Length: 191
Image 1: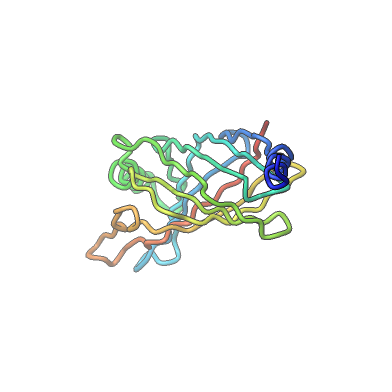
Image 2 (image 1 turned 30 degrees about the vertical axis):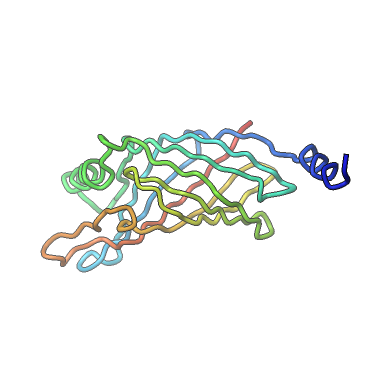
């Protein structure tokens, strides 16, 4: 064998990718936060996705080889706003399920990483495709991994309009919703 080929084979054999499962439940959580505008400025809608699953193929020696895949059950989204009364909370929940996420046609949200970059001290930048309502768009997530416990915390921001979703408004625009959505997650991955 040629030296270059031997080096490639040796590199492939020394790869230390470990497969983990990402599962909902326990302390694991995935949330979306959207800020209000106009008369409701300072308020936020908080949405929780209690059902999700995925895979992490983690290579501590070569983080660029790491891959993440996540499937989120959009039909299970719940609205966690504490500042709304029961009637308004139901309206926001129904609107989110039926009009924003259109869960009857698109019951699943997906994330697939395309590039993972180590930033040092357990910090990573995860580039990937987030698919909502059948539209896949690039996003960047910032994540922190505690390698001892395999707990991952992170967040990223994306725009509703990037997915063909008009930010909701009411009262002739006196009450509205920002275009930016902040996604946050806290998961412990398991073998």
